[in-house]
Image (tube, rainbow, N blue to C red; front, side, top):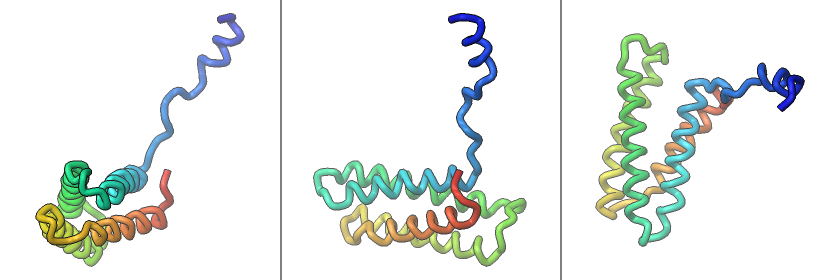
Length: 124
């Protein structure tokens, strides 16, 4: 490599772009929701569905921990709705794992949250 090429590449940005917290949340919801949808219609992929459901429940637990923090600036009403969705998601997940319910409503909830995250500030 000659000096000119070294000079050109010395100051290039090699790091990935900075991601916003909302963008990170969106991506987590998107990955998990895709896995739930992709495995829901194939009984032979129940273990994949169960893993996706576990990750979804974990994601909702993280969200609830965040909204429970006194420093959280979301409106109280929105925090209450998120908590309700967490409780519903947790209960419905148990039903899906017992094969008593469809995963569709969980996919719908996550998709609605993703729409909200995208429209709030845009995903980056």
